[in-house]
Length: 83
Image (tube, rainbow, N blue to C red; front, side, top):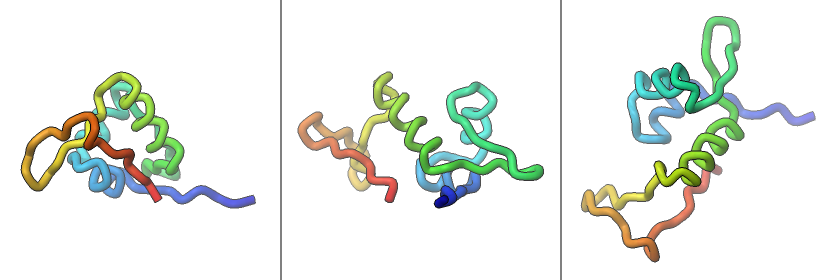
């Protein structure tokens, strides 16, 4: 049996380019799932993918071109690879 990689709230925040506080806010609003290991929160890759998939379906996740702070045209948008 292969065990999933576990990620800290800080790692997820860094990946999503949000603050750690935003991650905890999303957890308290039920927008993301996580697990508790002792007193710490941890995320599996699948939980992160589920969050991105559910928000992509709702139109809340949008790719932006960070270097120019301009939104990409639909033809320029790309999928995010978690690997």
